[in-house]
Image (tube, rainbow, N blue to C red; front, side, top):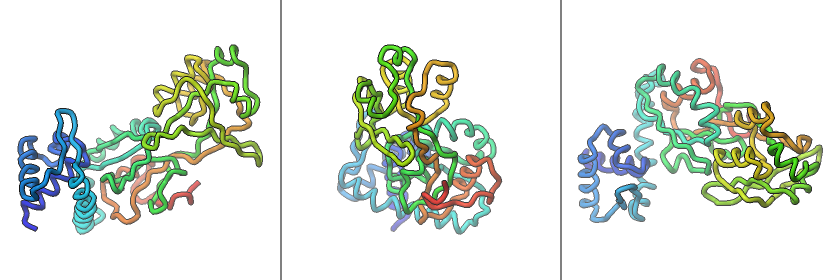
Length: 311
């Protein structure tokens, strides 16, 4: 492969993985016009259109998708081989692509952005907030942040938070109008604010557990969403009962009385947040520094674990 052909393929993969000529150009240190010319040269050489372009978006054609699936892992392997050759003590640098739940972004990433940037000035964090279950390796991410029960088995996992408690909550006004449920079965007479999984489109069930009895409830209501910014305000405005992780917004509302907890004796504990990355990939210095920052630890003080072993 000639150097120009390698550059064309690297540019193509960058455009697909960033979904934008502008972001890919910034990543590669090129102008947009230069990057567009490189992609045109690649398409002309292969005699096939690889990208669908509009004024707002760019996406691979079917031949482009197949080419990306084959080339992206090869290019990542080459990058990792170079990084490994440079040695584990190499300075953290380059772009680190992170895919995270919105809860992970809020709880563990946002509070540490400034400190990480100050300690690692040569690293660019490319953070995608995604409440679906993306394939981080297949989509070109270096690491992801998910709850422990939703990790792939071939991933190395690092615990970031303690386990979470699920809470059923409602506004005092809603409970005054409709009464307080005493058992999960009582929820069939209530409006439920539901969560829809991005990607699959399925509505999440509500798992309850009391001693040795476990059930999963599916309720109806007037609000379904795939984002916390909708479901929590819906509960605060008296539109029904919400079942969710105990995040800071819900904790604050419980503390000042805007929400009340129900079915507390039925609420289980679920795995907390984990950072995970492919066990088949060499640990890049930038990722090592990122993990250390999230753990508030010095290099080498945290041992990665396989999913499910650290609880």
